[in-house]
Image (cartoon, rainbow, N blue to C red; front, top):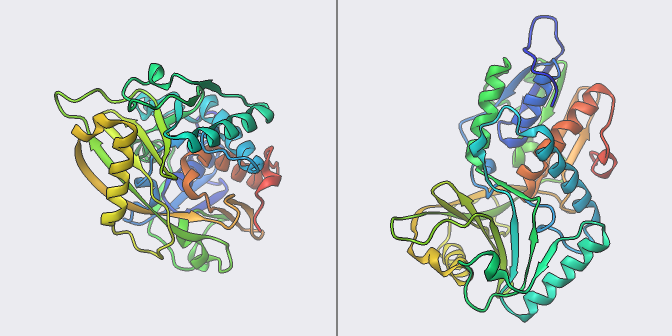
Amino acid sequence: MAQETRAGAGQRTLAVIGGGVIGLAVARRAALDGWSVRVHRGDDRGASWVAGGMIAPHSEGWPGEDRHLRLGLASLALWHGGFLDGLPDGVVTARESLVVAVDRADAADLRTVADWLAAQGHPVTVTTAARDVEPLLAQGIRHGFRAETELAVDNRAVVEALAAHCDRLGVQWASPVADLAEVDADQVVIANGIDAPRLWPGLPIRPVKGEVLRLRWRRGCMPVPQRVIRARVHGRPVYIVPRADGVVVGATQYEHGRDTAPTVTGVRELLDDATAVMPALGEYEVVECAAGLRPMTPDGLPVVGRLDERTLIAGGHGRNGFLLAPWTAEAIIGELNGVPVPEADLVGAR
C-alpha cells in the first residue's frame, strides 16, 4: 500500500462514480497516490451491502476458468499484502474455506476441481474426514478440501472502514450523476455497478439477482463456525460465512431484472440447504433476508480499463466484488499512471 497522503491544491483530480466496495477501493488507492478524489454516491447501499464477503478464488474455481483463477489469486495476494492496512482488525471473519461434498456426485465434482487446481500449480488440501475439520457438519459429510489462504470479511464493516479511511485521506463526497458531462475532474472512473451502462451505453453489464440470509447465534446454540463452509445440495451451491454474531448464508442467483425482493422459494432453499450442511444452524435466529443485484458480464470477468482519454471503467465484478477490489484498485491506478499492472491484459475494457 502506498504511503498515506492527503489531497491538496494543485493535485490531479479524480471523480469516482459509485460508493460500493469497488468505488471506495479505487478512491482510497488514488488518494494514497496523491490524487484529489471525489466520490459520487447515493443513499442506495447496492450489492456491496448484500454480500458474503468471501475472498475465495480457489473455492470459486472451476475447470476452464483459468483466467478467473489467475485474476482472483492476484487479488487474494493483495488482500494478504497490504489491502487491509488502515482497516480495523475485526473486518476479517475467517482465514480458511472448507469446500464439502454432500453426495457422490458432489464428491466427484469436488475432486475434479481439486485436481484442476493442483494442475494449475495451486493445490488445496483434500480430506476424507471433513467433520474432523469442522465438527458442526452434518453426519455423512466426509469429502472436502481446505483452501487455507482464503479469507472472509464482514462486507458492511469493510465498506464503512474504506469510507472512513477515505475521509481521513481527504476524499470528498458528492451526489450521484446522470451524465458524465456533469463531472468536473481530470479523470473519471465509472464504478457504479449495474448502473454503469446508463453512463456509458454498450457496457456488457447486467443485473443478476442474489438472495442472502443473516442468521444470529443465540445463547445455548452451537458456536459460529471458524471458517467459510461451501457445498452443493441437490446441485444448488450454498455458502455459510462466519460473522462476529452469526453467519451469512447465500446465495441464490438468477435473472430477474432489477427486482430486489427476497422470495419465499429462495429463502426456503437457502435455509434448507444450509441446515442440510450444518444442522445446528436450525437453532439460530433469522435476522435478515435480503437480495442484491450483482453486476455480471457475459464471460464472468470484470470490465476494467480505459474507455477514452478521460474515462475509465471498473465494473462487472459479479459475485467477486470483494475478492477483486484490491486488484481493481491497482489496475485503475496503473492505468491512471500509464503503468498497467500484471494480469491487466486479461480484462481490458471491451
